[in-house]
Amino acid sequence: MHTRRHVLFTGLATSLLAACSTMPSLADRPPIVFMHGNGDSAALWQTTIWRFESNGWPRERLFALDQPMPLARDNDDVAQPGRSSTAESMAFLQAEVDRVVKATGAGKVILVGNSRGGNTIRNYVKHGGAAKVSHVVLGGNPAHGIWAIPGFNEQSEFSALSTFLRQLNAPQGPNGDEVTPGVKWLTLRSDNNDKFAQPDGVWIGAPGKPTHATHDGPALKGATNLVLPRVDHRETSFSPAAFAATWQFLTGEAPRRTDVALESTVVLGGRVTGFGLSSTDPASGQFTNNLPLVGAQLAVFETDPTTGVRKGDASHRQAIGADGRWGPFTAKAGAAYEFEIAAPGYATTHIYRSPFPRSSRVVHLRPDRILPADREARAIVILTRPRGYFDAQRDTMRFDGQAVLPGVPPKGAGVSTSKIKLDSDGQRAITGEFNGERVTGLTWPAAQGHMTLLELTY
Image 1 (cartoon, rainbow, N blue to C red):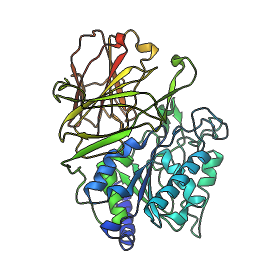
Image 2 (cartoon, one colour):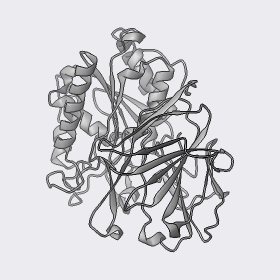
Image 3 (cartoon, helix red, strand yellow):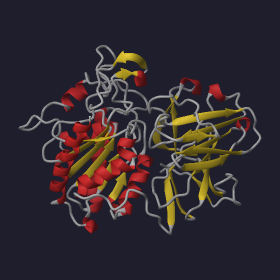
Image 4 (tube, one colour):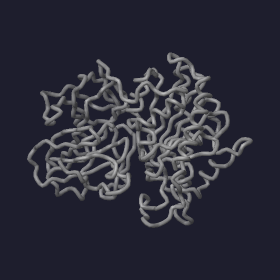
């Protein structure tokens, strides 16, 4: 494995020299378009955007997308409510690239994608997009499928046996590459910690069943392929290591910093979205979408970061309109905030976040529902890590004083949320900690339709 990594780093250095010779000056950086993964949103790129800004990439040249229906169909050939096909996903990206090119006047853009977003990018570039793209960076892209099991959902876009992936991976160019010629390509993958590049089917609901997938499945012939040790599936795009590799590939030099530079004025905004229901009965399940939650009421409160207690009245209130946008809200630098969202059909959700170091246009908010299995709880608190997973063997974590997080397996990185159900509705502080980040909020009574979300940023 060490030999393999050395080869990959050597290949990266060679590609970086080529990239460096063509990259414009800092003031003229090309636009970067960020494409999220399955069921995700533009919000996951928040820290990546901050790191680009902290190294001088102009904020107005960074575009994170929200695909309205981000979940893939179970069968790519069969229409499914609330889900998108590979063709629909490609059409969405094509329209967004055209919009960015028109708005910026740029000749070409850089595309950066995570997971399913990589499928969309590759499909777009292969079918006419190459003329508008200079570089592509793919993190954790299931390029060769998550499984290759005969008879097991073969036409999912995540099946190596699907028509879609067979066509996408067909040889291109004189060298028979798996990437479209004329564009510089980088793939980033984990050594062995990506839940969707595993030889065992534990993460697809088939533990012990061979998937016929491999750890190096995200690598592509014709690309620069880089291994990032021990990162999980999402961290292949959203970690400091992923940012450093991406910056170096695009510019030919290491970034000045991988942490986030502080801004004296912090202006926040984003979108408020909800969940679709698979039927009129919430017990049958819900699915994410990025559609506006029109009519939701948002209130933002400054809080004491050690107790979660509000420091006075709301700093910002807003009814959510047809575009789903909220903000702009000028926050206090270094202050912690609670975002309270009330909407019909949802619990009044209290989202607590760490202080924001910089401005952001992708502080997306989504209220939750109290599920039937949780209705007997007196209070419900969820700790969530949107930009990565919890790894009990790798990470230092505590949730309400517990070192073992409920719902997080003792081995493997594949769960990004942990839920605590309390038997008392007496309000008190509750804290989630992850690798040095600490978020404290208050519990709220579930019987009155409230729940708490502690959202990690890093």
